[in-house]
Amino acid sequence: MKRDTVLIFEDNAIERDILAEIFRPDYKILVAANGREGIQLLNNYFSSIAVVLLDYLMPVMDGLQVLEHLQEKKVTNKIPFIMVTGQDSPEFERKGYEYGIVSYIKKPYQPEVIRQVVSNAVGWFQYKMQLELVVKKQNDNIKKQNDLLRQQAKDLGQLTETLVNSLSNIMEFRNLESKQHIKRVREFTLCLGRSIMKLYPEYDLTPEKLVLIGWASSLHDIGKIAIPDSIIMKSSKLTPDEFELIKSHTTKGEELISQAIQLSDKTVHEYACDIARHHHEKYDGNGYPDGLKGDDISIAAQIVSLVDVYDALTSKRVYKAAYEPERAYQMIINGSGGTFSPKLLKAFAEVKAEFENLLATYPDED
Image (cartoon, rainbow, N blue to C red; front, top):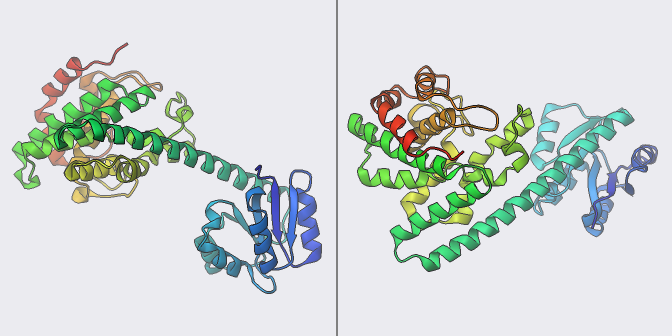
């Protein structure tokens, strides 16, 4: 059913009529004179309601009591709620946002302003719901692929290797990453990991751990499955909202690995979750999504972060040409690709020539 209705909670008859007239040209209108009446209308017409305008001061139940009542059912995750109020208290606003409202409209309000606020809220929620459907579909596909691979696998090691390769192929099929990019990241990870293992025994890396980290690195960008192609493949500069969506591939990646992929090897699973979430953290704390700093970032995520930057710099993208390996190396050493630890940079310098050989061994196809 199409969501084409505005539900207005407002006990003042004059203001209720004014709000109804503002939106009547574009929406069907439902009105409630108190909180309890509005909740009943919400239950009866839930599937058709596009947005709720909620007055704070109402008899029977006020706006915050309405939100508190609806909180257990997580209704505010499915329909945008906008609070209409004359209150001007930071504490009041904070509480409303905690309950899930998306915006406030302060009385007295201007019709054009309230129209725009509602339009923005409805548009954002529609996009959010569409994105959730895309992610659910991708989750279902990955689960099916996972089940098939589990039946075919002969042992634990074969299962992990086959699953990672298959997921890498899914990403390549969607043109999110090339197969060669995924191979290079894995080989760069092993190469840099061996250098760190030799120079810095305090990180407790072993050849066995490096193999597992290498497999886990193949899934570092799996969260991009949840990002629309129009943004992933965009050649022009991203808008701030688009960039925030791109950044969410880190948390989406961790969610996909945790909830959908279910790697049987517990250690690979833990490395993969950590790397997917934290491969854009920076040693100085200026990365995302958690703003981790220093060695609060695992050594596995630090390694994949550096090799991912190196591969991005030396590869052609829709928005840039490939840099020569020497220039990419100097950019990383000088901090142009973000801040890395001195230990990591020293280990990287030790294997500079090996990285260049790997680039030549696994070139992207024209």
